Image 1 (cartoon, one colour):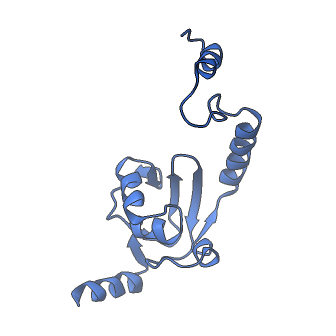
Image 2 (tube, one colour; image 1 turned 180 degrees about the vertical axis):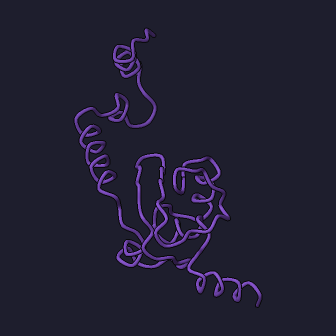
Length: 139
């Protein structure tokens, strides 16, 4: 019972754990993935690396790197419940700089794909030679 009381107190104070918030805002599929990203320093609040138990408050500026995409968001609301995508998107607002950077990164990935991204499964001898030519390695 104390655990549910603690959750209510957090909600009343307008703060929730960063790993729970990242999961609720749908930046990560699971809370454990969110906690791992926080532990690895891929999530920063106000430019400072944080721990998974750090509280998120309204108006906090958070930098998130989930491995493939990077966001810089401002917290508009806190929640520790994962809901539908429209509800999750209402928890934050992405900064203008972040929107521009993500669009540029997406365009760069489209124009200059990874050399091995078209290879499915284990590369053949021909594929390895093609990768070597691009990367400068000889096999």
